Image (cartoon, rainbow, N blue to C red; front, side, top):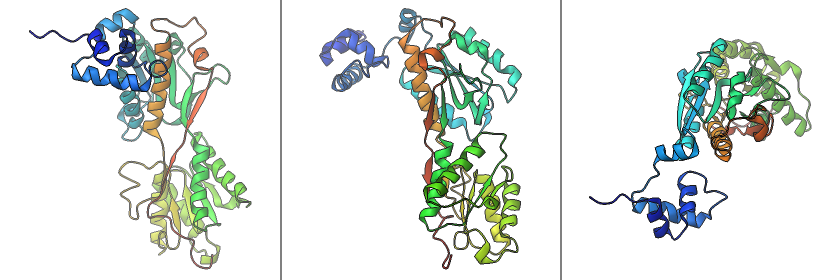
Length: 360
């Protein structure tokens, strides 16, 4: 029987040390091993059909190589599940597996979900939410390195690190897009202020006007809700019975469902999109924005990117102190207490936005 290749065989073929092989194949090569040497190690491992023994590695490092993920509803969401997909891809790349528990929006289950994962000896924890919101962090998350994705700790001073979308920048870029098409009379339909996303997107809209040296017409900013019917009725307030010279030439929406309602209102009033009114969404909701008629210009939430960034930061913390539990100060101390990472949203230009109508 052919002898199974060892890490020493890989080291000899790649012309590097045995420790370099261990670092690279266990996801800790960056910053420790030259990029050229990393590639030689991977090529040698592939040629010898070698992979590390995960069980032996876990025993040596006193790690389970498991990351626990708690979500409020992400597992059952067709939208924000991409956050977990991004996190899981990074975990697998570094030789970790993820175990996910969904509380189905029942906050009373948060602490027990975390405890269940801790009983499985997870090396780290991530909490993921559907929609940006403050989170009352379960206190037992402090027992291992932990991070938040698409949510932030509601404790102002001693919070966990968080990875969230840059909503202010997204609102600013959405307004900047239609301004670049010549629009100046621009309305904004937002959801309620109970969630942090709406006021942050409005703040970005205001910043765009300030940057362009223009003042905001407060009558053009309406907080109407989040659903299609809210977008429809909000647009009717702005457009119904209004002469063409007095109506907004562009309507920005705080999500794609509102934008659908705006487009329906335009059709009800005999207005063309984007010839008469440009319409802009937010979220780039799967099977909604791209398939609309006309296809919806929008700001894409960086869901997969947030998951990947959060997992990358978490694994850096996990692998920096293998096998050690917190000293009681909580993992946020090592990660930078309460630090936040802003991930930019991406402008997606489709067919629902166009040049300002002639004469406006």
